[in-house]
Length: 373
Image (tube, rainbow, N blue to C red):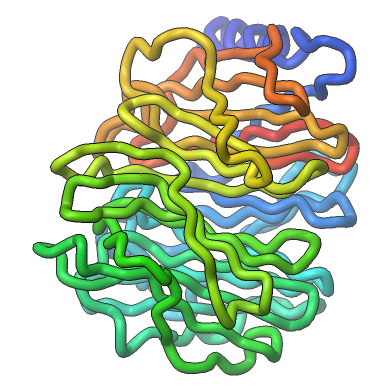
């Protein structure tokens, strides 16, 4: 066993050192305590914030840890949910999500399928733990399979988004939002936000984020006529009062692909990553017509992309191969230049990811990439 661990360590070290100059170093971190479904944020002070899941399929708990800038160990875990067992595992599509505000407040959302509850809580700066969880959604909560997403701006805005509707009539589903203007203290009424009747793929995750200029983005998979499983991007530049919609990548499929999507901020503007027909792609939101993928054909289906952009504009894309409803699959990664050119910096972890999990990537202010699995 010691020999195997030594070999794995040497392989990971070789992978992290095999970087062209200026591309950034890659660090690999396992989720603490045998946790799965990591979601992480690197704040402006260089601290890493991480939430993860532990427990069974229907009843589990979320935990939060930090790693201060310059440190090598995670903090002691804090349970996020105040009601024990009030989180679900339901593969990677139901993973909890977090956002960290500029003042250090940590905002987390997740959901239960039975009964349907979209939970929210926050941890204010200096507080020893998270506030009591509260359900935000009561009106548009039918036919849900995936967790909500959350984003924050620099003005006290907190935005929680999800999709819902008839599971048997996916083209009638829509994307909804509730928002707070006081840092999560109170939330307004639920409202539909997608302006086009694209539908929403019932079992595919969505992602929200706010860029440095205050624009709110939401990526989700459509389900028009139950066959147009296109990746769609919503954008609002007026504080989420109105949205415009753009089709990013088309996919004709008469079934739900059970896919995820992500958005990352960075120099040159945010970038979006997604899956289409077993391959993972990304594009700068400012240039959605320039779709970029990993060179070479995928031996097996590629899923659950994770994306990060470092201060130099360099991009790291990570994903899973060979994953199924239960298996986490193999974790692979590729580094791209700021212009989207694939570099020779790429790798594959020798061991499989944990069951029901997916990779996560963050970029540090020093330019390093951290892959968490």
